[in-house]
Length: 71
Image (cartoon, rainbow, N blue to C red):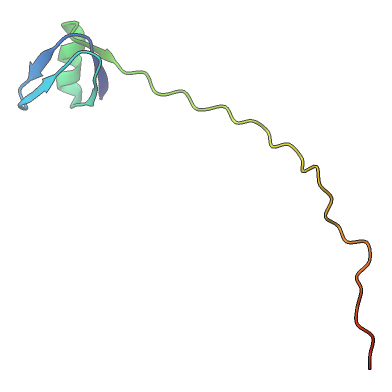
């Protein structure tokens, strides 16, 4: 489970965690940190809005193709 740390803490896996960091840790440990108010569940990042593509403004169509004459 991904959590955001609210207070400096240490977990039993030999890791120090500092305020503002986000970590992916096992669910059981994450629930304990959340219950003790050391962390909160990290929100999933919002998908970026995509703009619709504008139509091309150039017209590259060829009106007449010149071909070489037979010799």
